[in-house]
Amino acid sequence: MGTIIDGAHWADISRQETAQKVHALKKEGVTPHLVVLLIGDHPASASYVRGKEKAAQSVGITSDIMRFPAETEEQVILDTLDRLNQDPLVHGILVQLPLPAHMNEQRVVARVAFEKDVDGFHERNVGALSIGTNRIVPCTPLGVMELLRYEQIDLAGMHAVVIGRSNIVGKPMANLLLQANATVTICHSRTKNMRDWTRQADLLVAAVGIPRFVTADDVKKGAVVIDVGINRVDGKICGDVDFSSVESVASKITPVPKGVGPMTIAMLLSNTVRAAQMQQQG
Ligand SMILES: Nc1nc(=O)c2c([nH]1)NC[C@@H]1CN(c3ccc(C(=O)N[C@@H](CCC(=O)O)C(=O)O)cc3)C=[N+]21
Image (tube, rainbow, N blue to C red; front, top):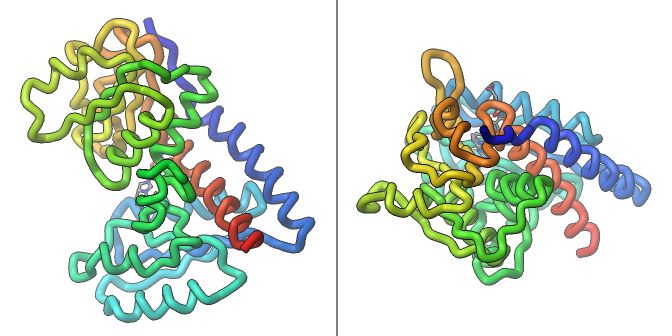
């Protein structure tokens, strides 16, 4: 039976490290400040954003939530971002996704100054990650790497299989695993005989967005299984991994909730501090 990786515990440790860095910045007269733009009324967003605000407060980062009605014109958001980009007291900017359908997500995300892009979605940050000169790295895959580091899992030479190829998780995850010297395979919706790949994985990262997509038959005995999924089924959240069956095959496994999710939030705080440090150094 596999060990359960306690994401809530490791997120707590990570937040303590971040709080110390915040403390050091404050001594230099800098209080890291995060602004979250919440546009529209996507059901889960309001509660996620409150969670981010609480977490920021817990490490001494100040934050503002700017709320906009769903029908807000895109230009209003772009103008707001221009103003926040110019404001020296703002170190991090996050535009909560998804955006209302009438907005162009690419265009809005691209408008956040890359130095303040704490999501790591700006093409400058994406490009840096892909050539290995990492600046700000997307929170979820960064959180996964931190979990693996805390758990002392040495990735060199491992076969890591990532299911999912999104810009937010799958692609940056693959890049980070490559940097850690894993052999990386990316599977996706058009992959044929996916199980032939996943069964070879020493590390399996599920970022598909389909509840309980990965079952015990997809997993090699002793593999490490990381579940990035956040799905809502019958009012409860569950991951992309069928935890109850996979748990008995895996050597280590992250649960949902209290796995990758809390680390994602912890990395947002860490990225905000990183952004403040980089702006401080100029
Ligand atoms: N620009 C942007 N950046 C994001 O990082 C971003 C976003 N937009 N839009 C929405 C998604 C979703 N997301 C989550 C992060 C942590 C948990 C989390 O901590 N979940 C808890 C459970 C929470 C619950 O019970 O509802 C857990 O897994 O234990 C969930 C969801 C960040 N997102």
